[in-house]
Length: 86
Image (cartoon, rainbow, N blue to C red; front, side, top):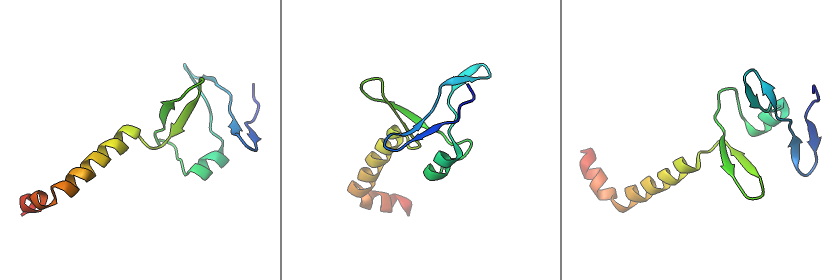
């Protein structure tokens, strides 16, 4: 049960789901945290994919979509926003 995560060349890291206090979780190794520039307190968003697969991302896909909509509105109505800013 105290196995260290094993590095797998093509697939990344193998992590074990384990009990942590009253919860269940995985522990990310220091090397992975350093490579992905993650720190304690950062949020990861879980994106469910096909075949029991998940993707963890520090980027919120809903936020990215909302920012795209906002950027388009700022481009389309640039003159209006400039007038309102006066």
